[in-house]
Image (cartoon, rainbow, N blue to C red; front, side, top):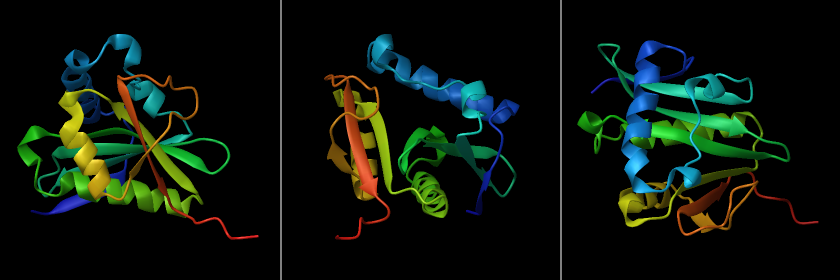
Amino acid sequence: MAIAIAVETPLQDDVRAMVEELNTHLYPLSPPEYQFQMTAEEMAEPHTTVLVARGGDGAAMGMGSLKVHDGGLAEVKRMWTRPAVRGSGVGRLLLQAVEALGREKGIHRLALETGGTDGFTAVWRFYEAGGFRRCGAFLDYPDTEYSRFYEKLLIEEKAA
């Protein structure tokens, strides 16, 4: 399967559709006050870069975003692959592309928040297979049973 991953605007109809698919999937898994979703408009802000995976026919198969914060921190946000391509490696390629973009931008630490309930076990395995390790809450996320936090160091701190 030919897959191309590129930086794209989230304001396209097919990317907006994936954002809606992701939101619809997440909605029943945890209370709304513990869902930290971004709209397509928020994803289009300058501190966020959206990567889209497309098949040889140009159809959008998945997406992932890098949201840059101060202090060498960036978040992995809005990771989603369409159900028809799950297990084909599209998600892994997207996560690798997000990580590579983080390295290009000089990011020291990638972090992410995902759901903390049993409906997210496949997601936890996905990030752990990608080298992410559990960590505590970061930024202004609440430390709650409905969230699980992961991090991956991209640039090791040099010993003083």
